[in-house]
Image (tube, rainbow, N blue to C red; front, side):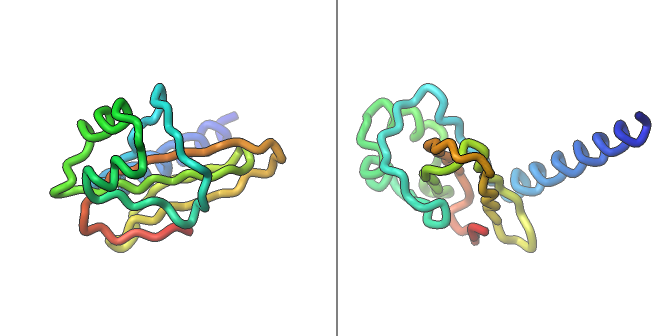
Length: 132
């Protein structure tokens, strides 16, 4: 029991440190809950990069979605990365920071239930990033 508690504590500290590392670089995931996102599934390794209000309008035609998202980003200093793909319900995408670079880590799920996944991240306009 003590070993399990110690293991959970280490995991919690590791996860908190990982999330903090991404936040430290100004990377934050924007919640899309409640928004009607009409986007065709793409490839997780090729997110849509949105660097202006015009690009936001092209990516999200809904005025409601544009208004909600434009309140959360300053395009003079930030950019958005929009990930949209179909895959296992257990697929995961996380953001970390290593050596001054934002790394989006994709982990494929093992179930065969096809689900739509959408994630939107805001990060500094000059940030270097990669999907692994």
